[in-house]
Length: 119
Image (cartoon, rainbow, N blue to C red; front, side, top):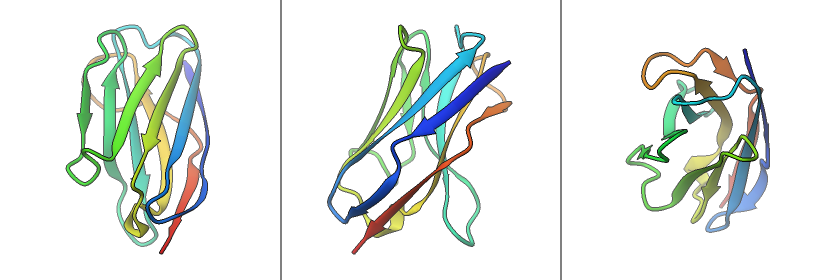
């Protein structure tokens, strides 16, 4: 089992920055992947970014490419999502997810953290 705890959400003005953290405990992710997803009110959950835990290879949604950066600290077993140049349309509940395999569904999810960007 892997337990995930997010932190770092909040209220920010458009153009501002926030950094989300996702602390993992339990079994290590090893060769697995950590991802970030978001869900805005009335919308379906959407993929934001993910990172391969052992290599650091990253993938981003087009909507955040160039503004968001996903990273991880293997020693701390923690992943991060640095969000810059935030827009009101980035407002959502952000959740981190993990899997202990390279591809496939994410079985482990955090509780989510609210990010609100005011115009």
